[in-house]
Length: 84
Picture 1 (cartoon, helix red, strand yellow):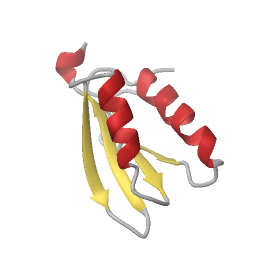
Picture 2 (cartoon, helix red, strand yellow):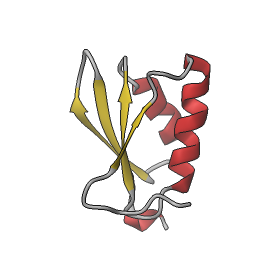
Picture 3 (cartoon, one colour):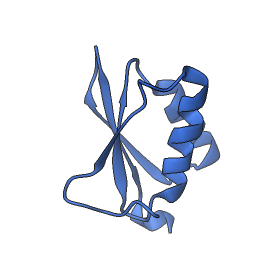
Picture 4 (cartoon, rainbow, N blue to C red):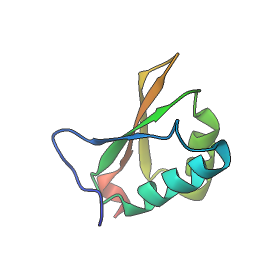
């Protein structure tokens, strides 16, 4: 099932996953995003390394917006419409 645009994006809390599973889960969600789709990532640390990995693998195809910066980090990740 693809994640689509919604008034309220899905919030995905990865804090309960062991660290080595987090990027895999997040990239599964990213791959499911429809153009214009988005979700909110909730994490226990700044996920900046994930941003660099996402940008390296999918350059200029996603938005990255911090909503909250610690002690819990919330980042809205979206697939740009022009990335279709």
